[in-house]
Image (tube, rainbow, N blue to C red; front, side, top):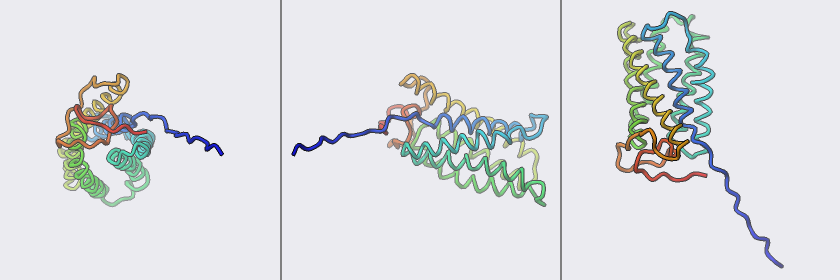
Length: 217
């Protein structure tokens, strides 16, 4: 009996979701940081986007990073997507009834600063641009947490300004991911990983220059 030949079926390549996750994070961070810095005259313009863009879109990017077997991206985007959804729910449902909302926000920022600290360390294996995103975010969270705990408007405003810088760095990194993915080469540089041994955790769009990136299917 002639044996039926086996056929190997491969999943098609998928687009890198990291630029989407970074853009969603950047825009929502920018809107909230502009308010914290005292630059806006309106209310909570960031709130709707905390659910729809910074929350949902970033959470989806994290789920797609699981498909790419990118443990760093999956953990980062899923966590910060959930952060925005959780923060939005806190503002909508809890803040007005809380006897000390600033203290609550201080603890929330402190908790995420702890998470961000080890992600900052591991981002040194990705690229300089990604490291700068987590570095500026670390400064934002620490300064805001201190400002909320101390009820110090000057610190909260300073945290807002640093948050705007964080958003700008994230937007640049997102833009690099988009154009590099379109061109199939490095158009906007993202810099080398700070560790000599770069981790193959991102697609070629955001991979550090000179790093060998595993093709994922």
